[in-house]
Image (cartoon, rainbow, N blue to C red; front, top):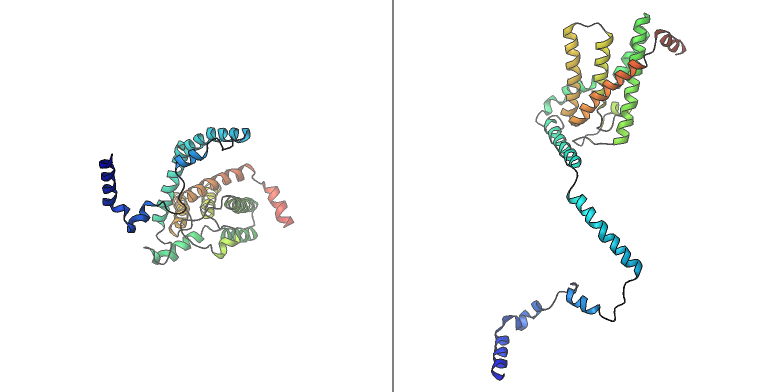
Length: 271
């Protein structure tokens, strides 16, 4: 025994952690949590048993937490697909935004691209339709123009309502213009210019007798208006595609509620 005790004392003296400059390493840091063993010892006979209500609450939490963890760790396939498509949409929209700012790669063509977008704005179309309606002297022309004016007003109200509901921002930080504020076209989804271009193109193709080159140019114009909104960074690709779809459905709705010539003459005379 004395020999083993002397060897133990010699081993303690040779341990560098027992020196004065290393004593702080052996002490637990301030504010450190107590080990589990000490907490288990503290909950001895003197500890009070948990109340029945607390035990039932802990049991419910232990039954619910694994399910929540599984939902977070294993999201649904629809959620994964939606997030993946959204990420692709944002990435492709940023790549196509070549005229989004002055430092962009196509910054010199920004004015021309914005001019193409203005051709699909609501204010010029409404003003031009009213001017043509005043100048028109035929019943057939007034009928077509009155229904076109109804379609344009429907488009502005629909786009403004959906944008106010979704409130999606564009891929780049760009403030809307004065004309956009006048038509309440301040958010990204859906693209109002794209919906208007699609609706007007379909309207003209259905109610005007046009040559084939003009029909092709009309479709190309609608596509260029939608593309211009992506190039200047105001809309995502899905915003423009949704705008095209909304414009088509607006045209179908106007066809269903088409106002007759007598109704148009009554509205013109009341106006």
